[in-house]
Image (cartoon, rainbow, N blue to C red; front, side, top):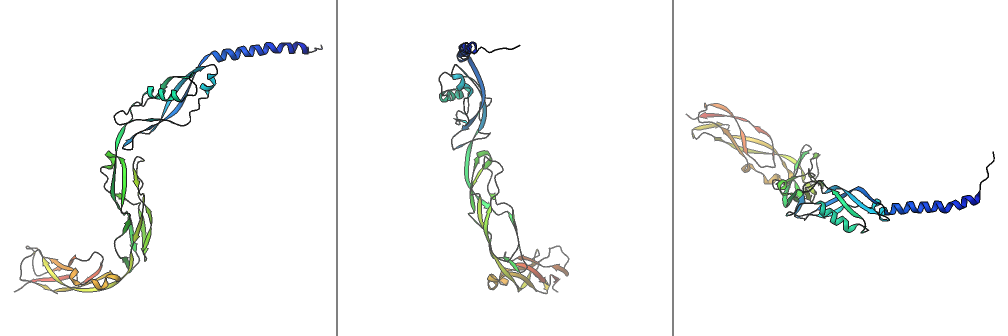
Length: 307
């Protein structure tokens, strides 16, 4: 069976289709609709305060509109966080505050915010404490044989400024460098090293690195002869044999000529109740901090009661 299309009939049908579409669009335009979406809220406060929890929150916003504004409702384009400022006296973020600020930013007065769900009503705040504290070297240093320190380790700067919640910062009295190890040194070290990073992002340190300087020099052997003294016993009729000892030590070449026997003290401890006429170990109870004792000869002496 053959069918023939009636072009005139089809063409005459188009106005009815267009009219139906127009009616449908018109009904949509006049129909009220709601739309919900999540937005980010960034809470801020003064420089003298710290928000203890996160400062970025999520709120669910329900918007309402009709007609052409329906397009605006469904495409409400908030991508940047809504910024709200609070203070110590009023740390509250209310739904009313969010609605008021959002409503002022919506591009059409025919769109209304009908509801905001925001569970974080009160934001925990704490006072900020800022103070300057010393930096401590946290590391190990070793030298090759016959080399050693020429002076103290120098950190520049030797202080850092710490800032954070008062309850955390008030008990922090120094800050360490990161753990570093220097082995078998024979020359000076001068380089940048980092400070230990804070364990919490609410704490800041400035600066967060320092320059370390480790002076190194060659060491050489030197010997001094020291008299041995008695401690722990006031009896003056005691005899020490031998009465002096030889101490061998390593010293930096730059200090060799400045170190002599007057900077050392050798002693044997003889208690009042000790049995005399015995053999006692010798101790070096005083020495310069920059020397390394190699040996004491002899390291034991005899103590007798004089007849």
